[in-house]
Length: 128
Image (cartoon, rainbow, N blue to C red; front, side):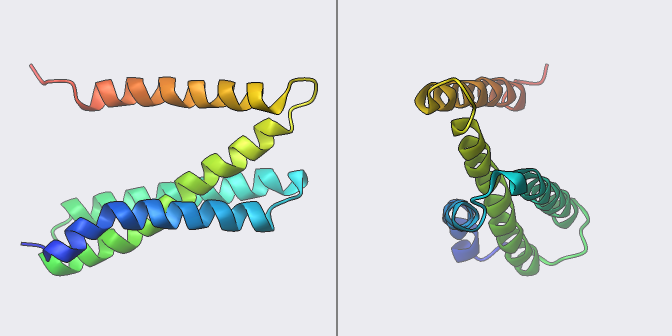
C-alpha cells in the first residue's frame, strides 16, 4: 500500500498550493491585460496535472509509494492551477464595469456552486 503520510497529505497540499498560487498570481498578475494569458496557463497546468494523475493511477507503471509521491506533486500543481484560476477569475469579475464588485463576485460564486453541485451529483450517482 501507499505510505499513509503521503495519502493524508494530498488534501492539505492541494489546498495549500492553491492558496499560495492564488496569492502569488494575485500579486504578480495585477494588470487585467495579462489575465487571459494567466488563465490559459492555469487551465493548461490544471488539465495536464489531472491527465497525468489519471495516467499515474491507472497505468500500473509505478509502485504504490512512487505513485503516491507522484500524485502528491501533481495534486500540488492541480491545486495551484485550479484555485489560482478561480482567484484570477474573481479578480477579473470584480473589475466588471457598471456593476458593483460585490454583486459580480456573488454571481460568480453562485455559478461556481451550481456547476459544483451538478458535477458532485453526477460523480456520486449510484450505478444501476
